[in-house]
Image 1 (spheres, rainbow, N blue to C red):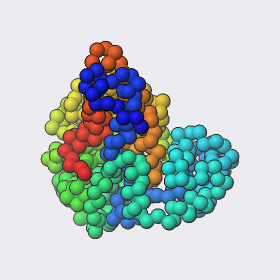
Image 2 (cartoon, rainbow, N blue to C red; image 1 turned 120 degrees about the vertical axis):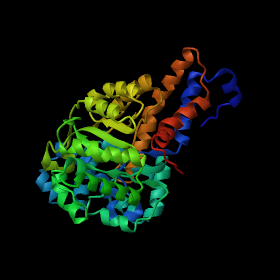
Image 3 (tube, rainbow, N blue to C red; image 1 turned 90 degrees about the horizontal axis):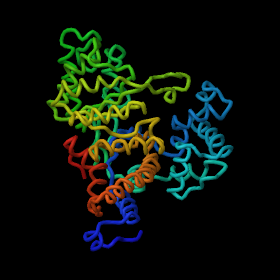
Image 4 (cartoon, rainbow, N blue to C red; image 1 turned 30 degrees about the vertical axis):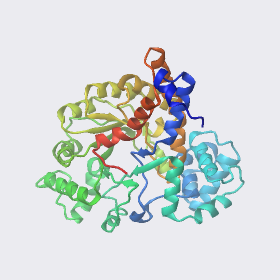
Length: 426
């Protein structure tokens, strides 16, 4: 790329063309922290998903398959992983141009590795991924994605994951998060697992249940060293309310977060399993009542909340609340919002209302290689938004330098998260 002269920047600021170039260069150069993923560090065993068959059978593509194929969900689930991937490839990539966001992302990944994007089969891609070793592959993927670190999602009540933490080794490119969905949303179903682990917790929260949940959180904080706790919540979430979830939040989880000095991430707006036949792809979206967020922010001023809401209709309201409460940090364009047209709208709105005091995006990647296309898309979508913001500022009389742009890009994609979570990163 053309390099801009420092002398011209300092004397006159950048013109619109140079602003656009500088934004692209700074976005490309910055090693981003991916603050929310479903990836796993290698020492957590085989939990991490990677490779072409996992990419192709990602649940977004499964949902598309059922719209473009005559196969039934039951018929699909009876296939092996390889057969599922072959069917999706044939249907969505061979028989139809891959123009959706999810299918186009797979094309971008294949292209990044120099693999054929219009092949009739997945043979060459499978051979390529089979030849990779995980540690070096992670390093290469992160480099291609332009990220330095990824924040995981770690569930201490997941029977497949919990045992892996016994001998888990820290990894400089991965940070843990303690996910609390099973405790907050489904305690009756996981009461026995808590008791089997030595915690005297019952679904009615009687006796020492609250103290025992708190002991559980303290124990796993020491084991995981999470950068925040997190829970995905339905569109019907209310606070305050007379519920197990509200009681646990008020008396155990939020006091623990406060005392341990880590934020709580609340992701609101899921309608679980609107179509259970398609499994993970079957969740939907609903507009939430964000007065619950207002109440939490006001009643727990010593707590910090990372907030993401799933409904497009809730985004403006969240910005308003973030202007009122400094302990709220809006982040990301989550799930069905992660499409360029909606990302553009949301990011413009946030900049106009919050300046650069938010976190624009996370990948939410479930398969390792997805970070390549997700962060490529983010940079491509945000570059013209930021460039237009700075060009308008310059038109209104404030010259813009490359250092201004670098400072803001770094704040948006690194230091807002580092400061809010009090995190020391590489």
